[in-house]
Image (cartoon, rainbow, N blue to C red; front, side, top):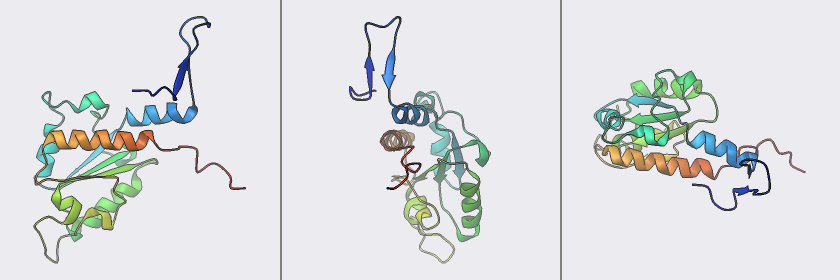
Length: 169
């Protein structure tokens, strides 16, 4: 939904005219066209796959285009247990994604290592990647992934895309 401060309508113009800022337009496009890269490492991946079914329908949020190539995606969904053996591969996939990019840690294992307190398990994917949204549960339901996606869309909507291009005076 657009807030009243984001755009305006000019009733005196010919046809329908919508006036908005470039930041608001870019954020609207980014948040409604997320292309996830599914990184299903354990049982949470089954719930992530279920979110694409017609019952939950992740397509309502513009994220139905699951890409299995990191160069064509902008959202990394890490679902499951990340071992130290897989950690460098997960990081390599994240590094190959174009900017801007976001990360969702899905499940207790991806968020904090879960029940595995061993030498082989990474205690949270946030040790190697900057995580934007954490989804709790073991395994989390598909509705939880959709709510995490909504939280990420709210975060993207409040970003300033051209802030980094401004020169400091």
